[in-house]
Image (cartoon, rainbow, N blue to C red; front, side, top):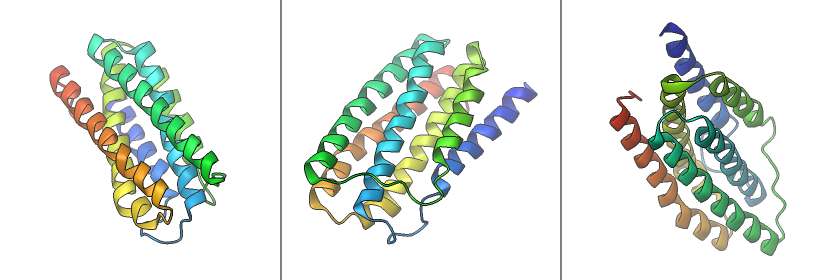
Length: 178
């Protein structure tokens, strides 16, 4: 049990690290950087959800993960199509450590099996979606200049919120504290 608790702390820290590269206030981000952040957020959750779909112990976790992966692939496609239409090449923020943090989180999750995996996956997804929703509302949306990009982010934000709600519902059903 101690290993699972330590892993939970490590995953929480990893989620926090993934958003540390964002400025804490609006401004300082251009649309190209926001496109990159948006794309990375989707890629990260696609990878995590694919792992959840593969390794989930419970049917509920596997189904949740499949839904999350499918939804994020669609959102990623929309974002990439809009970036191409606008001629915007995503440029990650300077000093971005989100890929390293994501790889660390995936490695930690991949080492788990059974109910321990389900619990860690659900905790991670709650933390991840909470952090992404907060970043969208407090940092990304106030910084977006292009109306089409802002409209896209506003259109998909309820999907991120739905994922958070469904993850919490699944965690509650399985008795996983988040």
